[in-house]
Image (cartoon, rainbow, N blue to C red; front, side):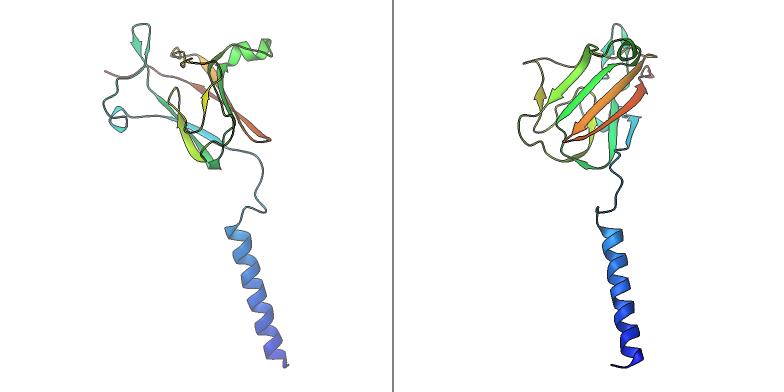
Length: 154
């Protein structure tokens, strides 16, 4: 083989290696990134904003940086979890077997493949202006994210 042939083979191998690196999760960091945002009412059809007492609050959407087969979802008061390892969850969902991989969830909504940790339990409303902590597990991976619910306008 000539030098030109070896150079072409090397270039081809390098391009394949770059394509595999960019298009696979082999080298991805294991940390899960969570982002939250307020859901606009027009995005949730025929639904009124959740209430806390007489104050309507904006629903919260949590998005992940990749599809996750969640095994546990829990929301607790952030101040309570700092002083109590076993803080009372406002919303606690678990899975028995396989949950459907998802890139996002809405606070208090049903998650395909998951059920409440306590039978027939529903999510407690979040008070506006208080810091809460979302804790998720996807197999052996775990992540936490703090958020604050704001009152709905109107």
